[in-house]
Length: 399
Image (tube, rainbow, N blue to C red):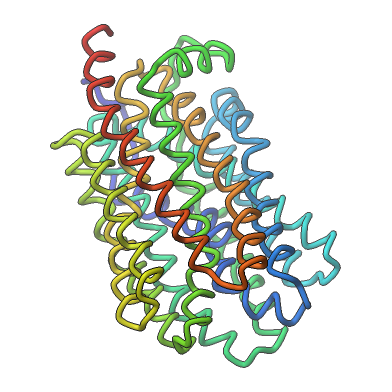
């Protein structure tokens, strides 16, 4: 396999990619669940209203996801990432200022736009610079999520424990400042890889993806991952608080999950290359399913501790395995669109997940039914993932 000339050193590319993931994914998508309790209370929002804000972020992400891939192909991944981070800065800044619900909705949509223009172009850029180590660099990039979860799990509960409105507004303002700094770093240090002479249109790329049965199955699994993971992120912390787990301890559990996932991402990337992406993904889904069921059956401090550790062990493996598997049976020039295709299903899952979960929680005044259904979906995802292994082998042999 040929390697691109004059590529940036991996010790520079990995930290920048981790910072991009931190700024776009953690700040824009995952931290909201930690900020949600105090933000909802001070603004007087229902669980459904709060969940709908998360849904709008997913809707913004979904609406521009495919176009972000086209934009990156036409103008370069670097410009796409800069645009995405800049949109995130606008969203974070708005949340630190506005109180009116329509303006909060607009800010959440901007955050979704920002994630779309940052994440998929970033994954494609990493794979293009280091095709022979794709799983590893994607895994390290995913460690930015773990690092962010670790830090936000420590500091957000500490900052918001006063319950004051100014506390959560300061968090969003801090996110804006960090994302703006990362934008400058990208402008200075990141470079676009050499482009393929053959330009693939969106229509051609999508046709290749949906005609590939392995890619379609990975899209279905990624949809399950998107739905169940965003529900876990948004509501498991609140479930812990509702089960009389102290906020400080629950925050530490989130930090432990993030700490574990920092190291599990690269390890899963390596294992997926050795064992096969389908097998690694199936095992990750089973671990995540068991982790979700434990506090449903036994909502105690020990159960929540086990849950967050097991999620930390498995979550980055889910992302790494799906993204690597989605590109394993397509040509290199179709890889970016394959990633975009499966990520659309991930975004659809994140779009419907918060709204459905919010309605169930408001209806039941309890979290257990929501997470029991989430675990059931993970079991279905594990079955589909296992069945995809043979499909992938046939696709590679025919290709």
